[in-house]
Image 1 (cartoon, protein in one colour):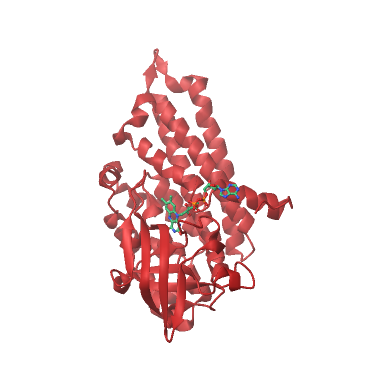
Image 2 (spheres, rainbow, N blue to C red):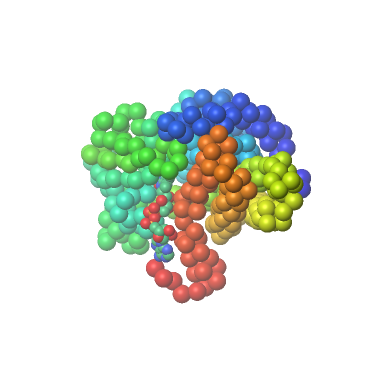
Length: 383
Ligand SMILES: Cc1cc2nc3c(=O)[nH]c(=O)nc-3n(C[C@H](O)[C@H](O)[C@H](O)COP(=O)(O)OP(=O)(O)OC[C@H]3O[C@@H](n4cnc5c(N)ncnc54)[C@H](O)[C@@H]3O)c2cc1C
């Protein structure tokens, strides 16, 4: 199958070759951030592909961005450390004032400002975002923010955060999704000045954290768009996020299929390559079929996004199909490698842990099925 953006793919693969398994294994062991990898990607311009040229980016569409992330993952690297730098700026691009765009976008494109943090999830509300409790109270030309967020990734490695807060209590809003607002938080001045960050150690190296806001002051000029309309702005950005993460899953799936095929051709047991046994060969072939099919849905969703068409359903479906295909491929790859699938130096157990995340974050499979069931098929709503 011909692949889109062959030059981008080739350049990304070349860059990733400089960051072999041993680099990721060492970081994974200590749960440290891949600063060198992220700097190299930034300098090569790959994290600013979605920023328009007038603001210093390459002005390409989501299709190009999916090619970048797919290749990163196919190479055995992990874009989770920096993918938000690509799309979180979309909230500013689509809904920011001309002053906000001029102030932030060129600096994000050059990497001078890192916009890696996206603060939505809270411990008590979970997926039910309209029940989030972090509240920004307006006082003169400032908002005073109080509350808590959880699972906010890369917060320690970001200069800015796009933060979703309530500015009107849910009970007083006309609709449950009204009364939320988006603020740009400057993490550099906020840290230990109303903002506390607590890292959470997880089964993968994802630099995720818990955030506590205690009378954090945010200038009113950092409000994006209209007060009270923030939920809509965040939803707009989520389609891009889901499609890009689906592309990472496609890359993971291809990584597992490449590794399993190569190993199954070389490893001999009972006097023949294990891949000659259909019990080994068919799961590899099935993984290829599933990843190829999911990849078509990712391409379709990205094309619709780039054409400015509503693509919430396709973004969700591509994320679900790709995350399930990559997980099947991960499991198959471990099984194909037998005991060696568990050895750190093969990178398979690391990628297995990494790709599992995507059935839960940024949106879990059940919530996608619920969207399809109720919004697409018209079945009765359960919530
Ligand atoms: C490593 C990591 C990084 C993350 N990074 C970020 C980040 O940078 N920014 C951010 O804002 N968030 C982030 N998240 C949060 C992530 O988006 C959420 O974990 C995810 O959306 C699921 O929400 P939850 O954990 O609150 O699960 P819950 O909402 O508590 O749900 C738990 C389970 O119940 C199911 N469930 C809930 N309600 C229903 C229902 N009505 N019907 C059927 N099933 C249901 C869900 O599908 C899920 O499987 C991250 C999470 C992780 C683990």
